[in-house]
Structures are given as C-alpha cells and as structure tokens.
Image 1: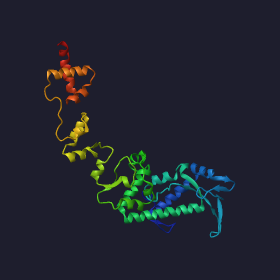
Image 2: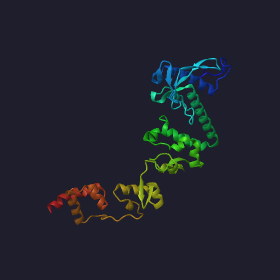
Image 3: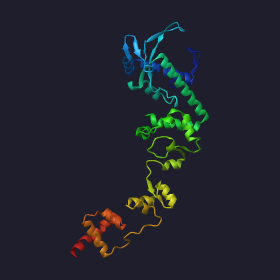
Image 4: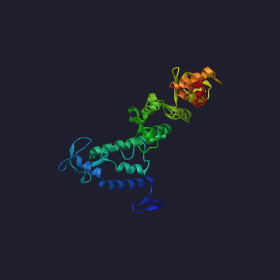
Length: 324
C-alpha cells in the first residue's frame, strides 16, 4: 500500500486496484461505519409504528423489516435508511472524500426510511441522472461545466464562493434545476472566453437574468462596482468614462466632492462660485456661514474648495473680521 491506498495485485478479488474499485471499497466501509450513527438510529425509531412494522417515507405504506426473496430463497432486508440528498450528487459526481463523509454522517433532517421497492426506484433514478450528466459532459463540456458550477455555488456549502451565492440567498430557477437540457435551450452554446453571468448581481439564475459574458464584462458587473443612472442608462463608472471620454477617477472624485450625477458626467468642468483668491466679501460670507452652523465640508463643496483650505481661511480671518 503506497500513499494510503492499495496498489498492485489484489489477490482476494483476483484483480488490480482501479480508481472505481478503490472508491467503492472506501465508500462501503464508510457506510458500514454509519450503522451506529445516532441520527440513523433515530430515523429508524421515528418510522417504527408497531412491532415488526415500519412506515415507508416514499409510498407511506406500512411494511415489515424483512421479506422472503423467492429468487434468493432467503429473507432479505425490506427497509433502508436513505439519504434524501444523495451522498454523491448525480450532476456533480465525486468531488472529495470530505464531502462524501459529510454526506454520509448527516443530520436527521436529511434522512428517511424507505422500503426496498422505493429505495430501488430512487437508486435507479439517481443512476439515470448520473448517466445523463456524463453524456452531457461529453456533448456540451463548456455549457455543462457552467451548469454544474452554477448549482454548486448555490447549493453546496463546501463550494468555493458559496458565501457569495447560496449564502446570500441566490437560487437557480426551477426550470433549470429540473434538467440541463432546459438550461441549454434557454442559454444556447457558450462562446469561447465567456462564462455565465447574472445581469442583476442580486438576482437569481434564470433565463431573463443571465448571459454569456467576457471576463471584462463580468469584472464590471460585480457588487464592488458603483453603478450610476443617468438619462435612463445604468452603467458602472468605468463604462461611463469610456463612453464620455472622462477618466473614471475624475468621475469618482467629483461624486466624492458632492457633485451631482449630471455634473460629474460633464466633459467640461462645471463652473464653481469661486476660483483662486477670495474677495473680502467672500471671506466674510465664509466666516459668517461657518459661525452660523454650516460645516466646513459643506461650505467647501459649495464654493469648490477642499474643507482643509476652508478651515485655514476661517482660522486666519475669523479674529480679524470680528475686530472689524
């Protein structure tokens, strides 16, 4: 055994250790370890209705714990504690052993007791979904990857970035959750060098709110960007700068200084009440306004001057004007 896994000849099974056989071996032993897991025992107790009778959560029929199998000529288990959410997601497939262990040793709310018939039918459906997902990965690799990552971001707490999607309540619409084909019909082929992007970053994943976007378009469409609405058009500062030929930093500075949106987006600089030296009347107005309760920052925005400069003028001339 090298690196923690069996290697070479496996005499007991008469074959070699393959990746699939290794996973099956580990998963089988993990399932055996769950038999004494407290939530599984509690699930069995909750489904117990009478001596030798349990209620199936699938068909809601009362069933015995064992039945006689005519083919095998012996009694077999007729009830099974099942995971409502599969341990291995049919769409995502195997991701890591950490997720498998977390899925197996889950809490009571993800467990149900099924009869043999319901459990078999559920297993067949999961195998069919897994096969369909594999086929989609072969036929539409880029689109299926986007679909798989979208679902993982929204519903898998262990997924990278989950806190920004599922953790914030972002969901996938029911139509897309139903099947990959519905997603592909709505979005079409994924162009090269693009990825799935939500137009409204606070909205859910659905046909009306999604597009294939380039990395630049995605970078501009994030909650970190400041969006400005002007003349019925909503763009981020970077896009307004490119559209109007203004440095984005200039737009940000103007907004920070209290300029209106229309003034901030003007190519020509707005006229300010004062530039350069202030007249005696201007200084008297400044001192009177500040003594009257106007803040230095507010008055500075009014005359187009930084608050620190207003402060220096006020400190310098306050006493002289009072003496006059």
